[in-house]
Amino acid sequence: MVRRASLKDLDDSTDRWAIVVRVFRKWNVYQKSAPAELFCISMVLIDEEGSTIQASVLNKNFHDKYRLSIIQGQIYKFVNFEVTPNVNQYRATTHPFKITFTSQTYSTEVIATISSYAYSFFPIIEIMKIDFHHPVDNLIDVLAFVKDVGTLDEFHRGNETKNRLRLLLADSENNEVECTLFDNCASDAYMAYLQNTESPVVVLLNLARVGFSEDGTPQVCSSFNATRALFNPSITEVQNLIQSAKDEKSPVMVALSQPTTSQLSQHLNGASLHNQTKVTISQIPEQAIGNSFVINCQIHKLETRHGWKYDGCSKCGSKADLDNPSSICPLCKKIPEKIEPKMRINYLVKDKTGSASVIFWDKLAVQLVKKTASELIHLLKKG
Image (cartoon, rainbow, N blue to C red; front, side, top):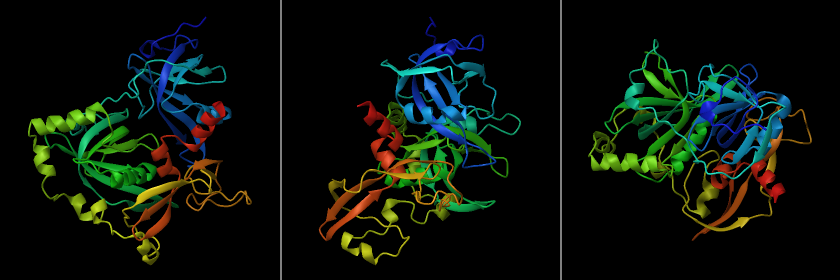
C-alpha cells in the first residue's frame, strides 16, 4: 500500500507517492507557437502543513479529464505520479520538485482540513533591489496598495491584438513599483478594479513574475494565464495590511489621500466608476454602441428562460457557430481549438424609469458564481 506523504517530503526517488491536497490554483498553458493549442494543465497544490508544489498534466489524452473533473478549490487524494526536479523558468513554487500526473495516476475527492489558500508575499522593497544579474526565476505573490491605474490599452503583436493594463503599487512605507498586466489577466483585472468599491484599494497578485522595463527598472508583470489579480479580497492579510498602515500613520496613507501626480494618471481617463457616465434605464437606447456607462438599479429576478450555459471558444469564450465547424472565432481570428460549455447569467433589473435585461457573460458570470460552467456541470452530475 502506498504511504501518504507530505508535500515537503516528495522527491524523485519513486513514483509511488500518495498525497492529500487542495487544488489551490489551476490554469491552462498554451503553446507559444500556436496560442490556441493547449499545451498542459498546471496546478498549485497545498497540503495540511501549508506546503505547496506545482503539478501538471502534459498528456493531451487526459486534458479533458483534469480540466473537467478536477476543480479548483476542492480537496483530492492523488496516488502514483511522476516527481521530477523543478528547474523551469518562472516556476510556480519554490519546491525543489514538481509533479506530473500520468495515465497511472489515481485521483478521488476526499474530506480533509486544509487551508483554502497559500500565499507567500514578496516585499516591494525587495523587488526594487532586483536586477538583470540577480533575477527572480520563480513566480511570486505581491500584496500592495494601488496608487494609480491606467486604462486598458490595446497593442498589436504580430497578427494578434493584445490587452495591457498598468498599475502603480506601493507598500506601507510608500515604496513604489510599477506593474504591467497583459491579455486576459489585464482585462479581468480592469473589470475587477472597476467593480471594487472599497478604499483604500489593495491588490493581491498571485503567481506574477518580476520583469524589467526598457531602462532596466524592475517591475511586476503577469505570466500568461497563471497570474490573477484580486482587489481587496476577504482575507486576514489584507485587513492586517490596511489596519497596520492606519495605526502606524504610514506614508502611503497620506499619499493615497492626495491627488495622484504619477505618469499613469495621465492615462486614467475614466478608470473609476465615479468617472463613468451615469444613465437611467430609459436612457440606455440613447447610448452609442460601444460606450460604457453606469446604471443604478435593483435586481428584480434571475431570468432562466434563456438558459445558463452556451457553447463557446475554449480560449476566449466567444459564442461558437456549431452549424459551421470551420467558422473563425471573432476574437481569436482562427478556428477554435476546442468548443466547451461557457456560462451566462441573465438578470431582469429595474429603476424608477423602467426595466432592462442585463447579461453577465462567461468571465463575469464565473466571478459571481465562483465556478466555471464545466465545473457546475460536473457538480450537477454528481448530484
